[in-house]
Image 1 (spheres, rainbow over the protein chains, first blue to last red):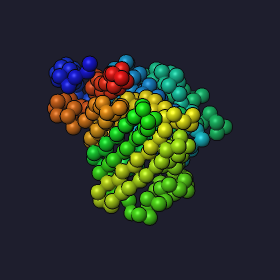
Image 2 (image 1 turned 120 degrees about the horizontal axis):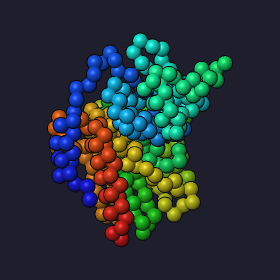
Image 3 (image 1 turned 90 degrees about the vertical axis):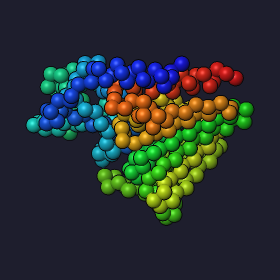
Image 4 (image 1 turned 60 degrees about the vertical axis):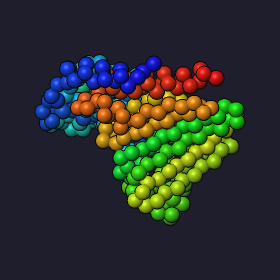
Length: 123
Length: 182
């Protein structure tokens, strides 16, 4: 059974590996829409997949956060990726399965997955 | 919503928007009487009696990006279609309480689903807010209180992956224990 004592051990272990976050200007922000529309469309597993994938790859220059409704409810779950000095990329109809590719291609290698973005439908 | 835990995630966003810094989620179940209730209490800015009336209307929302607000109406619908009921009470500057009651023996009862995932999402995305999650089944209960967790963690951030994993397992294992001891 998980106990609060166990949490103390986790604290001590985590404190050792805690590193200073890199300069804020270099941080890429991943923002997941978590209003009613996003949640109903499946934003929770998408958000969790981003957290897992970023942790797995130890990407210290990526922050993941949530936002409300962006106003394109029919395209939820929507994820926005904001890299410093680059245009915002808006991913639509995201699933947990698509996340691994977005992390690998876009967050790691800097190539947005165009076929998942809002640009792919507006043409 | 496919799981009630998603409604919880959604309704709590209202508490966050209301600038609450303590949010309590209470899930109670009586397997004998088939009663199931979810109570969400916050210490946010609260609502006026007019606002309480209008949040149940899908065409009321405080947002500006779209004209409908489905959070409360969907939760209310989920409760009522299972033969349960729905209540909101609120006091301006004190907070809001949302109670949804369900009947688990109704075919239209939607399962709670992955509540641990809802809690870890809320906790990791809102590290400046404290959450209390209480789960009670037939009088047996456990509580997760992030104020206690925070005290133990000291300078270690609440949203560190190892902490979040612990919280998820804590909720799942304790819930499992509640259902086993019957």
